[in-house]
Amino acid sequence: MAGYRQILYHLTFHTKNSEKVLLNSGNNELFKYIWGILKNNNCKLFRINGIEDHIHIVCELHPSIALANLIKDIKVSGSKWIKGNHIYPKFTNWAEGYGAFTLSIREKDRIVKYVMNQQEHHKTESFREEFIRLLKENGIEFNEKYLL
Image 1: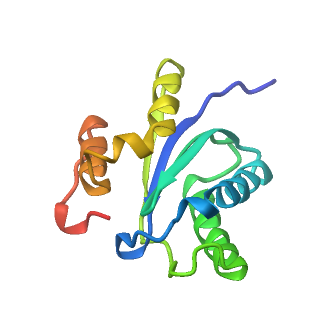
Image 2: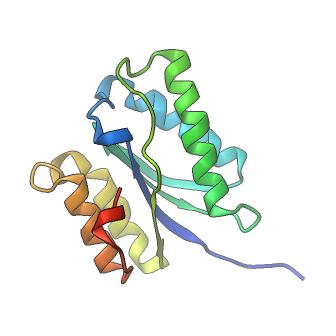
């Protein structure tokens, strides 16, 4: 029997200490690299974008892949790739943790548009403010002491 599924996620994570080191000049290369990781894990990318201190990914997760393993793969491999290719000279690492928010198909286009407009959006809201808002909007309890 065939299995039908739709597992959509809005993922976000930031640089260590929220360092503003992801310079636009390297973003296309980084985003292509992450897209390759997603493809190698049978995941479908809908949109990736970010600014100097964090990135957002909208994707479909393949059911054979554990979310935590995918994030670990993106962060560990991505970090090694950034350092090996000297894409962002001041990049040290990704911060611990991440945000992962499930989406319905009805929300997908709105979230893709939101991710596309990160540069404009972050003229008025910091990553920390955005992350707290996303947690609240998704009904996720948190302790500010442990926030990213």
